[in-house]
Image (cartoon, rainbow, N blue to C red):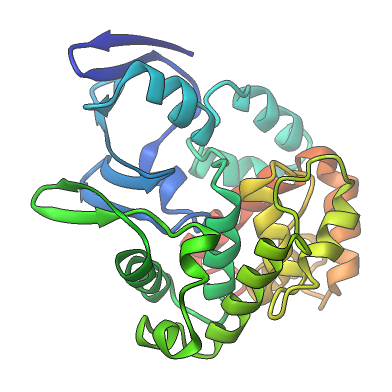
Amino acid sequence: MRYAVRGKDIVLTDYDSFVISQTLECGQCFRFEMIDDENYVVIAFDRVLNIYQNGEEIVFADTTEDDFNNIWRNYFDLDRDYMGIKLKISENDEVLKKAVEYAPGIRILNQDRFECLISFIISQNNRIPMIKKVIENISAKYGKYIGDFNGKSYYSFPKPEELALADEAGLMECKTGFRAKYIIDAVGRVLTGLTKLEDDGIDTETLRKRLMEIKGVGPKVADCVMMFSFGRCETFPTDVWVKRIMSELYFNGADASVKEIHRKAEECFGEYAGYAQQYLFNYARQFKIGA
C-alpha cells in the first residue's frame, strides 16, 4: 500500500482488494452514509471522514497524515495482504472462489470495541436501516458533536462513561426496544471491569465466554464483536442466515448444526474463517442463496 499527501487529502495510489462500497455495505459496520457511487461518509473514532474513489485512486478527504496513519490505516486494515488471504481460502474451493470474485474488495474493519459491542447488541432481530438509525439516535443523545458534512451534524458514539448516564427510558426513546436493558448491562459490566475490552492476552474461546456473560450477547454477537473489533478472524459468526447458506452450499442442503458448520469452517478455512464468512455472507445475500 502506498499513499500520497495532496493538500488536505490523503490519496491511496497503490493498494489491493479495497472497494469502499463492498467493505462498508457487507454488514460489518453501521456508521456510514452513501453520498454517491463509491463516495461515503464514515463516522468512527470521533472522526467524520469523507472517502471516495477517484479513478484508480481512493481519496481520504480533508484528513491529516497523522489521522490516516493512527486511525484510518488500521480501521480499513490497509496493511494486510488480502490477495494472499483470498488465494489461501479459495484456491481449492469453487464456492468461495465465486464469492471472492463477486466482491473482491471486502476488507475486515477494525472498529472501536465498545461501539462494536453495543452496535451488535442493537443488531439483534433488527434490519440494517433501523440499526443505523438507533446508533445515530444514541450518538446524538449521549455522544459529542464532532463535525458537519454537507450540512449535517455528526456525533461521536458515546464512551462507556457517557452512556452510563442513560436509563432504560432514555434508550427506549432512541428506539432500542427490548435491547435497552442489554445495553445497560453491557455498560455496567465494562465500567466495573467485569468485561475487559482491552484484554488481548486471552484465547478466543475464553473471550467468547466472557462476552457472552453480558445479557443479550449470544455466540453470534460475541463472534461478530471479536471479528470486527478484536481482530479474531478465526471466528465464523453464524446466525440463521449463515446457517442456511452453509447448509445449502457445503452440506448438500441438509440442515447442519452450528457445531457442524463451525467444524467445517475450521477444516476448510482455519485461521481465515472470518474472511471466508464475509465473502460467503455477502455473496449469498446478493443472490438470495438460502433465502
